[in-house]
Image 1 (tube, protein in one colour):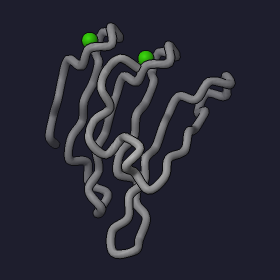
Image 2 (cartoon, protein in one colour):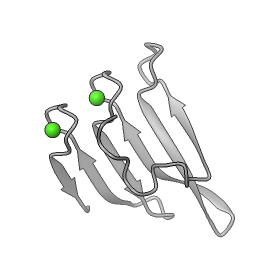
Image 3 (cartoon, rainbow, N blue to C red):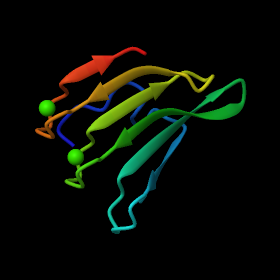
Length: 86
Ligand SMILES: [Ca+2]
Ligand SMILES: [Ca+2]
């Protein structure tokens, strides 16, 4: 994953887990959890859309669940092409 992980998607998270949504044995979603008033919430999610092991979509969440930042690597070259703040 050559793109530096966005803030919140790193070891500072309370904990992390991985999901294999397409059941190919390779983790394709990595979730990082934070805590807010003692409640755990997903603070960041990295998705690997093309299965090359590098994340292509990063979403940063507020404790409310609202997406605050979305970073997308549109052409899968490992460089983020689009950053939005929905
Ligand atoms: Ca990828
Ligand atoms: Ca790119």
